[in-house]
Length: 388
Image 1 (spheres, one colour):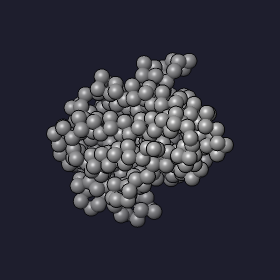
Image 2 (image 1 turned 180 degrees about the vertical axis):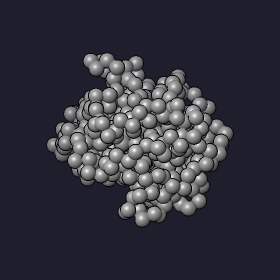
Image 3 (image 1 turned 90 degrees about the horizontal axis):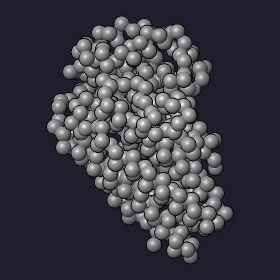
Image 4 (image 1 turned 135 degrees about the vertical axis):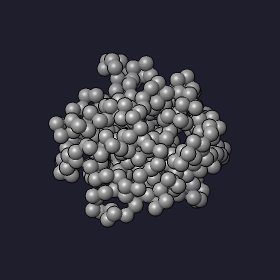
């Protein structure tokens, strides 16, 4: 098992292996890119739908099927931001998404095997670039490409995730190697790889701990979070979802899709797959299983193959090496620790902030589920599955 077979790398992990500022879309996208680049200004007018209604429909169906993937993913970044801005950029959510936005984003989503709204991949994984191309993917050298309102808080929120995802490349590469090492019965190499992963987790935790430096909880709740909700389980859509006009396969029926959420990141699920951490059946597990289908196709395959091929837990359990077991448990505890920090941020950035209207319920995550219960439950289950 090698991560390059899944479009991943040790240096970038699940991040795009290209950088979005180096991708050029052809002339049909000119008005779309112009609107995307001025989205902050359009939102500030208070009538963003007026401006977005005027955009042409570039008829992307055939292009989306044939274009290079990096171009399709770049177009998806821009269109998914425009769609979210159309839905959440004015006080009341619309019942319909106009055909000039609905048809293109469905065409792009169909090519990518994802849902036609803003995904975590469009918000984070594909939405960054380095200022110094010879420098590292580090917080002092990366830029968020597409914004909603813009500003330091919105940028920092996304770029912290970019830094974490880059650091996690080592976890993914070592995870793939551990599948082979466990099958070969090489205890020394397994321990070395696990210790290296534990050290990488410390660096990840260091990035995560910097979130409050430039992303204020109040600004996040008021100016960043409102735009990333979806239309599943959302009272703003009494009909049960959003109608995508002009999309034949939806037949004029409301569509209920989950909003962008950090729970769509594939890092922790990949670690659960490697360490064979199970979660009990309940509505929250069903939610996570559903979110799995919002990830890029290759990322889903990596998690699924890791889960199917990993025998690491059994290998460590039957080992006589106490230091190997300690290294295994240290990594297991690191993912539980990561979940704990996520829980702490959810409390301070969302739960403690005052609700500000429909679509920004502080007790429901942007994916449309009660997040506090989910985070606590899975953190605790993670902790309980160490090897004795």
